[in-house]
Length: 396
Image: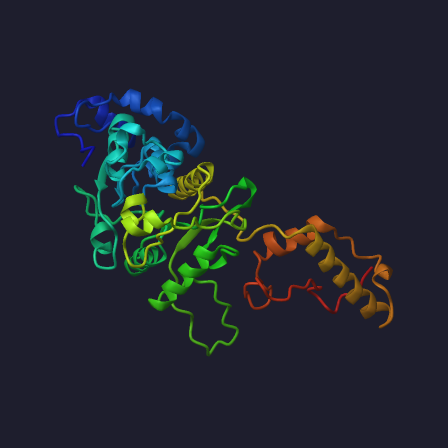
């Protein structure tokens, strides 16, 4: 543990501070007034009750690279009660363009140790468990065990792993143990800050990593939800779905994986910072450092709001294009005009439909959350139409 709980002989000021009380670090104890001032902006944002929930929460972050390091750093700065950080990898020179806290002095040291040192220097009042480990199906449950000194399972797991099979093993264990999870999808080869979305894993579209993850979870018998509603009362209810929200970008990748040089092939994966494990990607993904930082910050924001009891509600899919909205409205006008005025009437005759592009976007994404209004099926890659709800009503 980088941070440990206060001893029984702490002074009365710490006792009175309650959830905001400072805990012991390996070298010093911060006065309660100092800790409360450090966290005062969050308390003002969430209110006393919400802030207390954050201060009482335990979170586990898996993967401490470009995405996970930014998320973990913000959770530390928010003053969660406990934070376990897990990563098997080491800081490399090539990872300095995106890591939240690593410096040249950290190159060659474990990322978990790097984050542990940062935690001790930044938030010594947070109980920190920094683990140098690779999560597998066999050890995932042990890595999700309560932190030392606690009997409660983690309140939240944040998955910032970039390998599909490893992500699936972790999230399948979360589903079995009933632990809520946040998951980061692909941030490599992305750049556009306007394309980031927050949604249930079932609704993440145009992200190859999300699609592969759903498939890998399905192989393990885990449903990610999103199934259509059972319209027949005799149909069995769908199985319990994993409670997983993801942060993803629907921007198409701007670049591809880098080819391996003859020298890299000869020397092996470890010679250029790749991981020589059967199911791990070996070729290098080009990364704009700001992209994983945006994903990590988004994960931290979603995590903190959820822990405080004031969850952020993002759109489950990207905005409709203006061209598609116009096409939907034209089709609706055509259908309405011919319904009321005859089969050969042109759409322009439908003068009573007072809808624009923004209205179409609102109805599809904000009202119906990108799903069919009748069956609740996802509308991705399926014909999408707008129609009137009450067919018996007549236009004015």
